[in-house]
Length: 123
Image 1 (tube, helix red, strand yellow):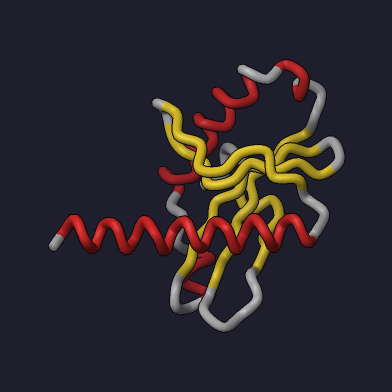
Image 2 (tube, rainbow, N blue to C red; image 1 turned 180 degrees about the vertical axis):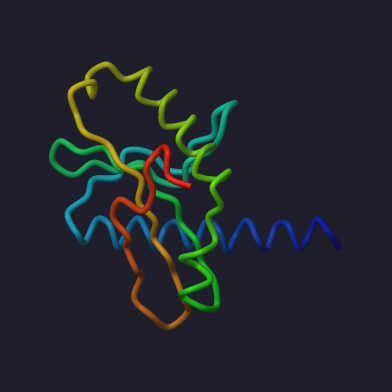
């Protein structure tokens, strides 16, 4: 039973990430990677717009406020470590800016894209 629940959660997560990626594409972003897994953390989406690299966390919840509040400080720190590792392996982006965004999804509503949702050093 636990395996079935995990698989359902995995499908929901993938669907949410696809919706978020589509929303970002509609806003002019180019998706560079999806579901990046590293030894130090994972990133749902990596996108580019102009000369900015955006590391995106996607959260789907029944309530928008719950989705917006779903990422903990420890979660952002893991995302930051994974982003550092990703950037270190891509010197062509060395002179690009980068930021951490959140896309919150709620059933029956348009996604909410929070630009610059977190910065290293924020509590």
